[in-house]
Length: 205
Ligand code: IMP
Image (tube, rainbow, N blue to C red; front, top):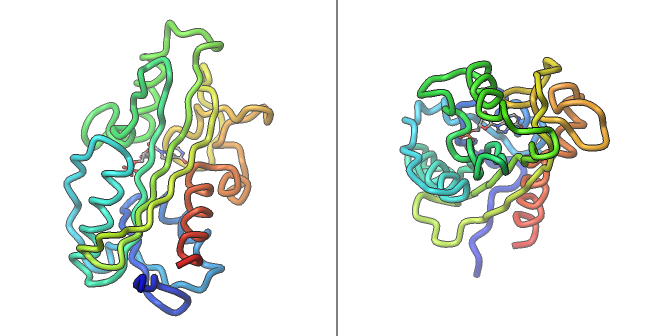
């Protein structure tokens, strides 16, 4: 029999320290009635994210949170994949401009790297991988991914969201993801899609 996953009333640890992502994931999970709690409530030490892909790093983070809390844990690993940069910043999105770099420095570096690249070749996508483990050694984690295609703008606009949102132009909407309402972003985004898939998986076993 497949072990059940957490449901309404159960605590699900969110293995992320990023305030923007916690806000978005919390809002998306709240209607389902789970008691979601950030891993900072348990002082979980940061995992060593040494995977080569988003999915590997999501699993590493989920297992780390579960190991230190003894609870089921959900982790996401996400970032921006720019075609003209062979997938960079990719899994290094949070620290593209160096360890501890903030969003502004990362965005500046991205614009620099794309300086010579015309608009027609600035395609990119946000990618999100999610992993849910029932316990630290769960051999059958639930895995879900989502992608969101866009184009990297020549300059930033908008003040919503976080990370690369001010540079991520949403096709057909004439705005960046930093100019979308939070619920609209959640509906379209890589994280929204991955979470919708994760919810289906959780409900199906
Ligand atoms: P993670 O915390 O290792 O998953 O790194 C995610 C990084 O990717 C963030 O710090 C952002 O720089 C970037 N990122 C992921 N999702 C988004 C998004 O929805 N908007 C803007 N940037 C994002």
